[in-house]
Image 1 (tube, one colour):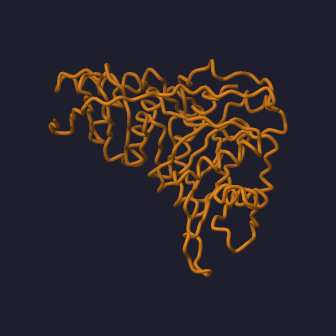
Image 2: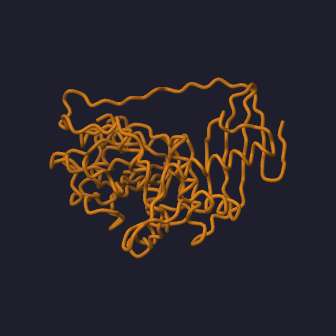
Image 3: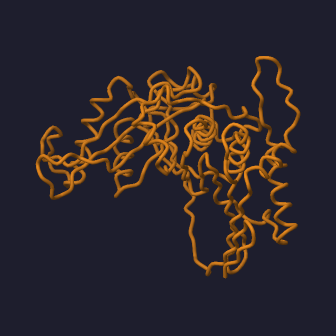
Length: 354
């Protein structure tokens, strides 16, 4: 049954079984990392900087920017990389190309420079997309391929992309790492025919690291809603859209859409007075985020007599981007990518098992 009323869609779905695998990656005894101050006991920061516009178009090439903002990325966390060198990207390109070709050809010897190699990997730097001097430079990986049946002069086409980044990482943790380790904890990948698994396998073998899935928690989704809504005066969010799942039988899915100006008025009403001094940056507190959410839930309950507090927030989206609990993110506006990546970097560091 589906019902439309103003900006709300309620949809019942037939009962389906779902299984969630609880994943807790560990570092084996042979790992070179050893012990570092643990982050998993920490929680998300209860206060963070208010979003500010970053014109990364001055720092990132047009080709890289077009890729970053047009793709829906699947998120993972990755533990620190052992002896990864930003100066060795050409060598890594050759090694990954050979690894993929060998795996695709079931281990047969492969000449990476040969014209018969369908897959060609390339590493590049996304220069200056950082927030602090301790952040490692973002690394972009692209894989190009030819069809199985192709002319010899037919160019390779992009079939997979991924990148590793660290934006405003926890300083205590970053500075505690041994000098041979580089921390790029957030891994974003497009999905294409198992290539993500091959890339992860090569990184694990080459740099003694571990990958794990990175979901976007209920709290993190609420943070993104508040951070994006806060940008409304400078860059219209058009609308604030939420998708909720309520625990009833059969399952009830609610799509809740709020006009940009209505969302901004509610957000403005819960914002505390700006107490930042001269030269200081304004901040947003978790109490403001929770008050914003309570206002949205209260408005919904008054109109539809459904309590969203009993459900789970699965997805949020605005004109600036979209995020899903399953661990998918899409950037639709480059000006506020850094703000979003700061939160996601924090989430990745907290998820790591070390």
